[in-house]
Length: 113
Ligand SMILES: NC(=O)c1ccc[n+]([C@@H]2O[C@H](COP(=O)([O-])OP(=O)(O)OC[C@H]3O[C@@H](n4cnc5c(N)ncnc54)[C@H](O)[C@@H]3O)[C@@H](O)[C@H]2O)c1
Image (cartoon, rainbow, N blue to C red; front, side, top):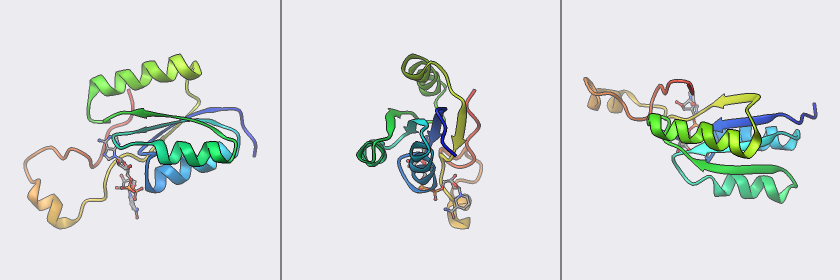
């Protein structure tokens, strides 16, 4: 269904988040690709098909980065209608074991504030 909504996709540079970004843009949403990695590939693919997207570098574990993301979304799009939260990794048992007792930097990220 076509939409004119504004969407923020965390983890939008790769994988599931990239797929969400492309699908939302194909349906007419303005998409913010928010990722610790470079979102240029996702943005390029969206623009190539006539969609609207920008990339914002953001580490979801950093409160300062998340605040900057919020400011960028307000400034560029005037707000957010849809949040898709895909940032993170899929930790294996071995990784979880190595990180025992320490906060994992990527897995199980909290929602945007
Ligand atoms: N792929 C699966 O089968 C599967 C299954 C269950 C759950 N998940 C979960 O879905 C999410 C996405 O999985 P995926 O397969 O698309 O992974 P992916 O690695 O392809 O993409 C994850 C994206 O999140 C970004 N990211 C990682 N840490 C970040 C951070 N701190 N701040 C901002 N961005 C960050 C990465 O740069 C990457 O672009 C993960 O949380 C994963 O645990 C995936």
